Length: 251
Image (tube, rainbow, N blue to C red; front, top):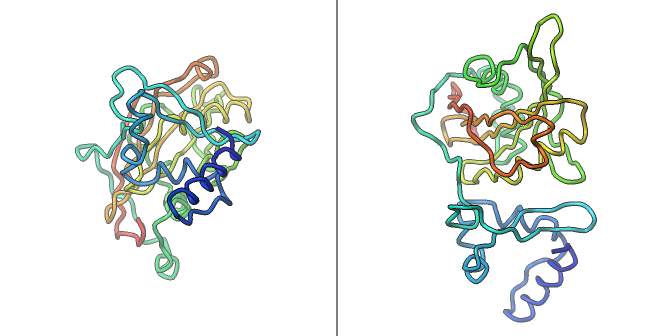
């Protein structure tokens, strides 16, 4: 479905049901649909009955694409990687964040990622609880908007022989506590990372807030360049809960 298709459908619904939905930003249609815990219940019953979900598409005026359910899939947008309460827990100091900065904390992905980067939560994970071994890890950029996707944070790691280390990219998808991690979004990030950089391995991670506690970090099995094009499903390799002490507003 194109952006024009979605905008036209919004206008038709407004005319038919007397609603006042804006048709000015159809690019956010899938993002808005998937936000919160009710994505599957918001999906049309008639489409779900035919065992079809959707994945966001960007570039060339595209908005989303209908995709068939995977084997054993029972709902359009399952929360396959919800917080595992018995995951290992590690304390992370937040006292280094100035009080004036904390006072501006809010519940959105930008603040989530900014806080995690400032406190080196991802670096801590790869030091104490990682499945994929790294020698070093450095944050490159946040909020990277690419033609096919958006990467909330991107890191460059080094692995292998310390004398001749290999470069690895770590892609990060960030979500608030109520929002599920969507596999297709993370897989798109992996493919986009390979398209943008000359590396042979990408390690995808998800970062999700636990309200009043901190972050739940999910590390997925590393993907090689040869595997990326056929990648359809993520495998959890490691996870951990990082407790912010003291708690941070908005997290």
